[in-house]
Length: 108
Figure 1 (cartoon, helix red, strand yellow):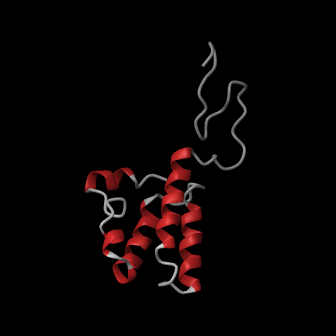
Figure 2: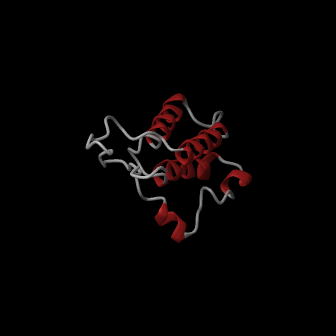
């Protein structure tokens, strides 16, 4: 960054004192997590009825908008995989992070 340039975080003003407008943009990490969540949802396409699929898609789409923490869609996916998933999916560490990592996923 050039001299005098400050990094703008969500909720902070820019160099001219102008507050950010609208919701924060989705970061590359949030987009990647969203892609993974939607990929995992694809493993349930035959097992879930349309309302359950729609609920999951809606919930996953709230994550990149920072409306829910990552652990929320993960928990709902994990619930459905316990009932309908394959061993391969149930054994993915992405769905069962260790306790310390799980706490890091609780921020919005």
